[in-house]
Length: 182
Image 1 (cartoon, one colour):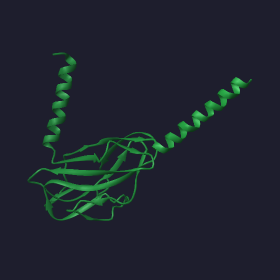
Image 2 (cartoon, rainbow, N blue to C red; image 1 turned 90 degrees about the vertical axis):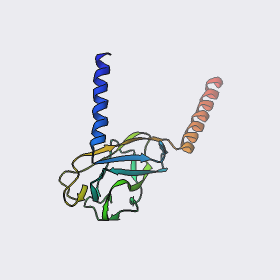
Image 3 (cartoon, rainbow, N blue to C red; image 1 turned 60 degrees about the vertical axis):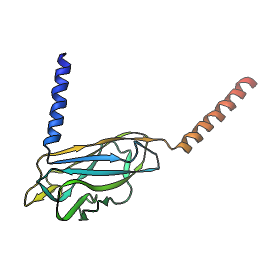
Image 4 (cartoon, rainbow, N blue to C red; image 1 turned 180 degrees about the vertical axis):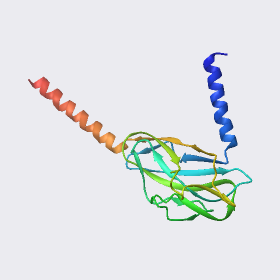
């Protein structure tokens, strides 16, 4: 086995064991792999809470590596969670009336495509913000959280692309006639 194969094997094994040992695994799941400029796509945030931990509350930040999408409206929290006012104003926080475990939909976000390109969607916790993280019963916060982000492609609006192509074809035809006339 090559040295690269051994290194990759250890790296992937480390990632798998980190996810297996995590007390919380949060996955970002877009409903579609792409969105048109001006269109919207729903993105679910789903958490897997390891037993015996009971999660009472959570708060997160959505991270984008490029400003190609923006939230459209407030997040819709999963059925287990009651909203609380998040200091950063993004609405990504919920409280449960009783501790929960297992797989839970935290929230669904609607994102609007702003400009063409690829954008990485991720989640993070601001360390100094006491309303972010995963509060456990009876006390404390989950210390081993794994975030699994996603990539979303923002594509030009089909009508705008068709209009641009038609304009380019018309311009080429006009320039072609002028060239033949001279």
